[in-house]
Image (cartoon, one colour):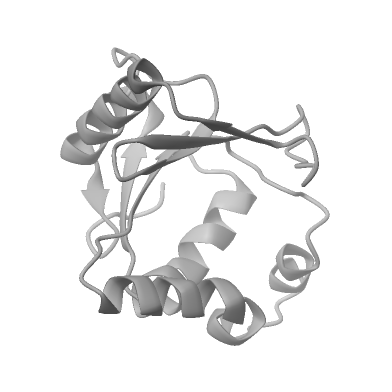
Amino acid sequence: MRDIYTPDDPDFADWRAGVRFDPAERWRSWFDVVVATTARGVRMRRARIVSEPVSEYIKFEYDVTGRHNIAAGEEVRWLPRRKAADLALPGADCWVIDDEVVIFNHFDGNGNWDPVTGMDVRTEPAVAKLCGSAFETVWERAVPHAEYRLL
């Protein structure tokens, strides 16, 4: 839901410098998790809510999505923020696991994430229901990666 994440990320810096790399190699551990998970028949869906025109970081994410997320087996959709204005959304990025567990990721104002304090795992049914419902609504409105065009 943010327009920038980890601005000092070396991969983002390389991309900005024109270095083209294989994201599946650089991020092998995540790639392998997605491949193994989807091979078991589990759907992994990622929805990105973005401001338009998009930030440079979102251009980076978009550029690597096909070669990384999609290639590994994730389904990815994009929703322009203006089309999410009337939705009740969680206050932080999150993963919803099996409609039972929510993992919130907390970033500071500059997009930095601390691996010690940045993750909040919640199991309350009401939290899972809220986040799951929000995700499904975003998913229905969002555009599949193959069809979305950056503005």
